[in-house]
Image (spheres, rainbow, N blue to C red):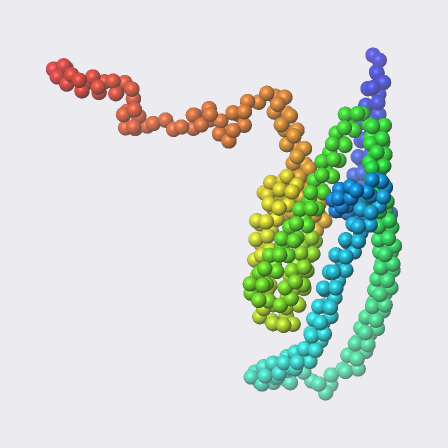
Length: 424
């Protein structure tokens, strides 16, 4: 019995797959460490690719309006510069709005701290005066004369020394992380600009790799999924921006109705933080309340309540419709995707699971439609309640109604009605 070359290849790949699977199952710690190091090495380029993908959405719109520039290279360069300028202007406006207000809030809080502590002291003194038994209890069980004040001072000094050391180490770690973050940010930005400028060339190189190393049908499928993913994620970014603007406008309108201060600032803050999944809502909620607290504590409390009401309306009614319609995903599955993504991967999972679910939904729908067409499934079988089931679900008459609806009884009764005396 001769074994063909194709069979030998299958046996080889099967044995190799079993060996790799065994190694993966028994060396999880080493694999996790290797993947963590690999991710850290390529993290600037992954961040740059994500940045380029996000900036590509406004850049395409800008480039479409630059049709008068005939040279493609010059048109692309102008589009990239305008996109970066728009991002810088938006960030600058945010900082111009936020930083002065933050400074005013911090100064107001610091100025109100002495009065606050004085009020706390008055409350404690009044409480002890109203409850003298508590003071007697403290005086009875606390011997201040024999108390080891030296030991307390020593312990406090030790804690302060450990605290200073910890602060210094934390500061050094923060500075080192900040320097690495700045370097990685610069590398990511340069990589993103290069990817935006040469995106057609990069796409051509990827197609060459796919068709050169994979069968044509597999390359076609991968490219089709890649195009669908690109379209879905681009629509998701646009829908997310629209949703953030709607949410910020709702918060601003609600604040105007109840005559709250800092309406433009808090509205912009709510819109910006709405782009951050899960954590952003809490940040906007607390910062807005902090700003309003300086002017009026009661209005700050009212803001906390109204913000939650607006957020619930936005999360359950507006967000699924706006974001879901932009990516072609039904509202119900948007809610499911947000819940599952947040449970699995936290904030990044909530951000990525919605477009991922849309891609899976579109592919599964097309595969199902092709399978139904291949099986020649009748259309009536796909109805909510097919005709034969509707007919079968009708309950048969019983009791007196069965007797009254019996055709034989009707015929007999008619005959009896026509000739009532025939039997006699």
